[in-house]
Image (cartoon, rainbow, N blue to C red; front, side):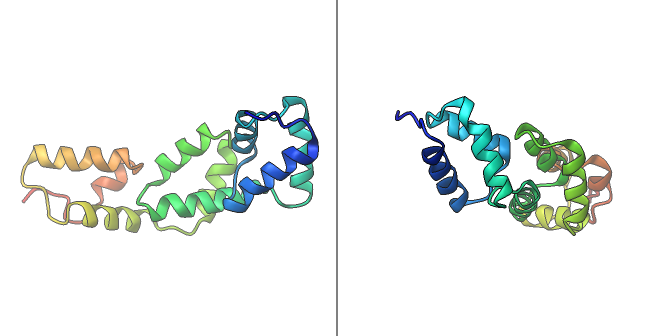
Amino acid sequence: MAVLETPMAIRKVAMDLLAMREHGRLELKRKLLRKGALPELIDNVLDQLTQDKLLNESRYLESYIRSRANNGYGPLRIQQELLERGINKTEITQALDESGYDWQEQLQMVWERKFGNSPKDLKEKAKQGRFLLYRGFNIGMINKLKKFNIN
């Protein structure tokens, strides 16, 4: 592994990563450390990227939420993943609120795509419920789901 010893080398690698997709500050820092960047230089480079508007947490949040929601994940799962990536809970909550997603409608689409039919018995209903919980939808939303009652 090559050691990135200069701010210019670190900036180039960071910009290459940002060119592929948006990154959060902590996520980018971890990747740079794995690529051999000197820890004492990373923060200054990241500060400069932020100042140059190349690294932007709100843009990252918006992009991440859109991507995960389009893949069928709910707000709780997205929030947990962003917390693991070092994003502040207040910022996450605000970004989720401002995302414009109708999470109940999103849940309905995920359920219809995966199951389509009402559960036949309690066992099947529990299975469907566990899947939707895993996907990040809360129990209140799941209980409001149309056609989620046993036939």
